[in-house]
Amino acid sequence: MTVAVVLFTSDLRLHDHPPLRAALAAADEVVPLFVRDPAVHAAGFDAPNRNAFLAECLTDLDASLRRRGGRLVVRTGPVVREVRALAAECQASEVHMSAGVTGFAQCREERLRDALAADGVALRVHDGVVTAVGAGTVTPAGSDHYAVFTPYFRRWSQERLRNPCPAPRTVRVPDSVRGEPLPSRDGLSDVSPGLPAGGETRGRERFARWARRDLSGYEDGHDDLAGDVTSRLSPYLHFGALSPVELVQRARTHGGPGADAFVRQLCWRDFHHQVLAARPAASVQDYRTRHDRWRTEDEAAEDIAAWREGRTGYPVVDAAMRQLRYEGWMHNRARLLAAGFLAKTLYVDWRIGARHFLGLLVDGDIVNNQLNWQWVAGTGTDTRPNRVLNPVVQGRRFDPQGGYVRRWVPELRDVANNRIHEPWRLPERERAHLDYPEPLIDLADGLARFRHARGLD
Figure 1 (cartoon, one colour):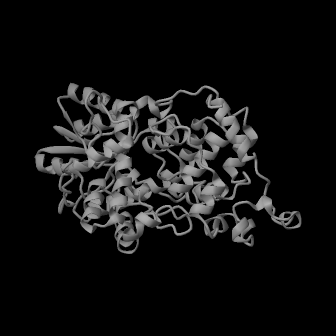
Figure 2: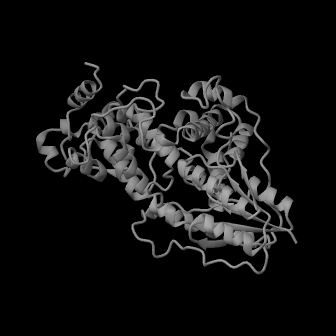
Figure 3: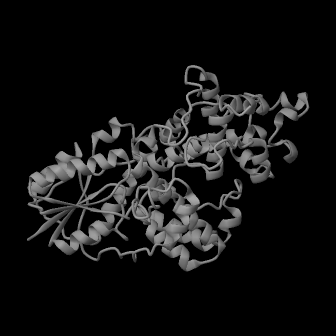
């Protein structure tokens, strides 16, 4: 009997899983393996919300495998040690896994390849599993990656995607292989009360329901904060519970402007992956334009604390930060506004905000979180790095009736629409009863500081 190992990482699904499909074709038996690597914790990549969601993804994956005669094997320890030991234990000739793009993932693959090669075991790394198009597939002449989205999108759109492969009917796992109990969401502390449920089953149900109800109106409604017609699929994409290839294909089959807009958002995700694959240091260093005048944690401690708590005095920013804490998720437009306020209006180092987001976001992804923060901060791929989003103007535009603000900032629920985004303009007798702070900073003063720091005045 021949045996292959499939190392699951950010691809916790059975539908459209090329590494699993290849392993099943190459061997009589397959060991689906997930390693709880202490290095993930040491690097600060895990967080309560993601640990809870991960536990449910693993439980769902195990249940799906058991329905096909298999099971998920969980081990704890350094990933190279555990994979190497398991391959020796079951006499596997191959280990299959999906390609990653972060510096952490690239280092993991290199160490695994070298260690397994010493044992005579081949490592097969499959590209285009966690993204629709492989990170290095689309490149411009004279460079290893695209630095601007629009030309990347044109090339990306011309790529012929592979056909999604169906979930296997049967998975045979060697009886002798043993694993640990699956992790559980129960008992985890500091989990956001509104956190969604994890797993491929829930993800596929959510997409099907959203596609029927909201996909057609996505182009016009995806920035409507109160309407909330976004797909909310980002946690499932982050953990690989859904296939981006399958989502692109199904959206294109649906057709229409809404589907086109949704596919464009999936392309943004691929765009960031190809940037970080080529420039792994961009997870911690300014990608394009270096700025050394950021206010630090010590210099802006009170402002940063108010921002984290949703007490800046700017309602749409505060609503965003409170949604983040309660749901472990935030509307994309709200992310832009909250991040832009910290990085440009308060002029605080973007890395401080990125760390806070990573501590709470269930979809907290080194690739998209860090590069979106850099885009907002003007150090990344934005072709207009000095744009500053005004939270009052943005609030009026994307939450004109104040429904989003009232949902998350109940102190303002009785404020009229024409003052919901500027409560400081209310008569003093009305403001006194709000229990809501005055603005941290006048927007004009924040803009002047930003322009001075950037040498624009």
